Image: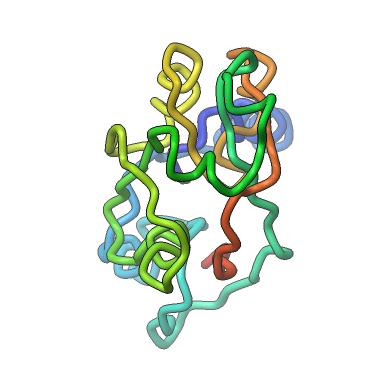
Length: 172
């Protein structure tokens, strides 16, 4: 499963109540994720990107996700929310193990306003605590911070820059 701790807190107890012997592996998404799923080492994987699936795997595309720009609840940008905030305040970027370019990066390359990267981190589990203690913002799929917005005193605002859709699939 991806590095979405809030989503894990919602899914794991329910799954364990229905299948007490179920095991979840919280692993970095890599190119190996597809290979290990095909080999039966992973029963169900949540993967991102439009890459072609290897023969033998099936997938269900998740409904269109909703993005938000997350930031500290009392962040100064909230009072004057608009596209110029994208370049004014530092952004937090999550760099995952897969080769897919982030939608925010694609928006930068397509001529949208260039954001300033304040920090790059290797996983989503560090996003909420880092945003709560800084003036950084992060534009992410809402699943990434499921359950963490209230827990860390964050706000979810409309994204400041339009980004291409992100394909999210469950693969088995």
